[in-house]
Image 1 (spheres, each protein chain N blue to C red):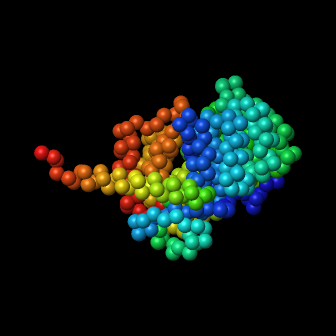
Image 2: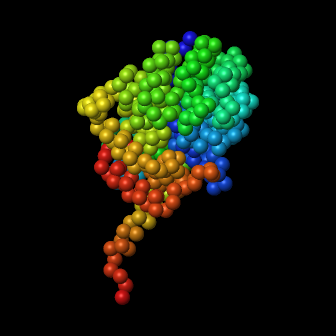
Length: 71
Length: 313
C-alpha cells in the first residue's frame, strides 16, 4: 500500500519530530517509534504540539504526586 | 474460474471507524490512521466490517467514507468494502455507485434472516447480486456471518453458488471464530477458490499452510506483528496439537487475552484511544457502548504491561 504525500510524526530519543517522506526514509530502522502519518505538515505539527502538551501534563501529575502534602 | 493465484495477498486491516462527537465518521482521523498503517507495511484496508461497525452505517455513509479516503490519497485498489445489507437493493446500489472508483473488491455476507430463510433463498440472494453487478467485472468475496446462525453460508450453498456462477466470486472469507470451520472450508473449497480468515488467531496457522492473506482487526494496533504472522512461515516450536508456535504467536496470544471476554469493538477502540492518546477514538455507535470505567482501568494497566514487555508496535 503506497502513501503519496506524507509527514511522519516520530519519537526518537524521547523527543517528537516531524519528518518529510525523504527524511523519514533515511532513518535507521528500530531507531525510532512511528506515531502517526499525516497528509500535511501542519496537521503533523498540530499533533506533535498536542502530544507535547499531554507529556507536560503527565510530568506535572508525576511531580505533584511526589511533592509532600501541604501543611 | 477464480484460482488461488488471483487471491488477495498479505495483511488487510479491518478498520475501526473513528467517530465525531455527533457520531458521524471522522474522516480526517480515519485517513491519518490508514496512512499510518500503510507506513507500517499493510497491504490494504477493509472498510465497514464487524469491527468497523459496518451494520451501523448506511449505503450513503459508506460511499462517502470511501470517497473521502480516496480524496486523501488512498488508492481504490487498496480498499475492500463490506457491501452487505439486510436488503438486496442497497447492496446492488452501493456496488454500482462505487464501481468506477476501482475498489479491490466487495465483501458480501448473508443477510440477517428469520427461521423461514432457506438454503435456496440464500442461493437466490447472492445469485441476484451476481446477476446485477457481475457484468460490471467487480470482485466479490463471500463471507460467513460473524455469529453463525441458521441462515449462514454452508457447504451446500457455497457449492451451488460456485458451480452456478463460475468466476463471479474471488474468495471465501470465514468470519467464524471456529478454526476447525475455517479448516473445513480450506479442505472443501481451496482448490476451487481462495479461502481467507478474519480471525487473527488463525493467521499463522493458515500462513504455515501457504495461505499468506488475512483480514485482521488486531492489526489496527499491531500491524507489524500481524504482518509477520501472515507473511511468515517460520516457527520455533510445535504445540501439543501440532500448531507451530513462535515468539510472535505468544505475543499475539497475550494480546488476545487482554481483551478476552470484553466486547471487541469498544475494547479495541479503547486501546486505539490509548495508543493515539486521543479520546475521540473511544466513541462507538449505539447500541454499542463504551467500556465502563472499571474495565477501562483494568485494560489500561494490562495494555501498559503488554507494551512495556515487548517490542514497539
